[in-house]
Image (tube, rainbow, N blue to C red; front, side):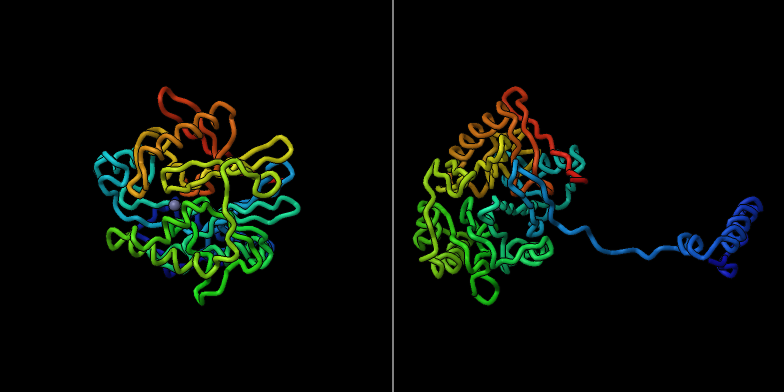
Length: 336
Ligand SMILES: [Zn+2]
């Protein structure tokens, strides 16, 4: 490493600076080649860490895989009912979150039970209804070592676009060609019913969901409340966000994780103010009741949860705080 003398602006440096830099320069030129290289100006890497995170639930191997964040733009009034856009922005800023652009992650969970490879929800697929950062699931799954052909089951928490529109790839072929697909009959019936298209947004949601689910009809299996879908994975009905919204308790060797789907949409607002109804809830009051019931159980039993839309990777604990909760993100593990 040499010192680029011609770029020096003598006015900008004191004599002491110049002497110090000269000393550094001569030390560098005397250093062995490996050290000289280590002192070189490193290029920016301009890439992120892979968006998957692996951990254990007892003997099960779990991996959170991101489909990319949903970009909602500036805070809007009544995304959470009764919260003005100004108040929404203030709460975000108070929590050191971006207050100019609301981001909701899409934390897709993979569980390998040892005998079954299970995917929970599929992200948004090739649809760009939720911005251009979504639809990353398949390459990120592959980067995490999964072949989409190897999944035995895809379990849907509900059939909103950001949870099931990745069932078919961009060409219309099944993205998980060997998987059984689990969902509630109530969600299938509601979200494929064209008479529910009360406005253009609902019409678009229903048309897109019909296009995803109806071609796969013979591979769909209906979930019942309390059913053990595969050994160690139990369905718990948590309706309100959609008519059939379901959460899943995943248990192995004395450890558990609740995959909470869209029981809550934001790690601060939906936990510290759990009574807030979300704009896209089919029945907001029922969604609040489901959230309170399951949050109470998680807090009392100190069971961690995965929030599909919570900040990456979306795993944490809830503690009761008066009539509300506080969310404690679980530390990410950095060594086996
Ligand atoms: Zn969602």
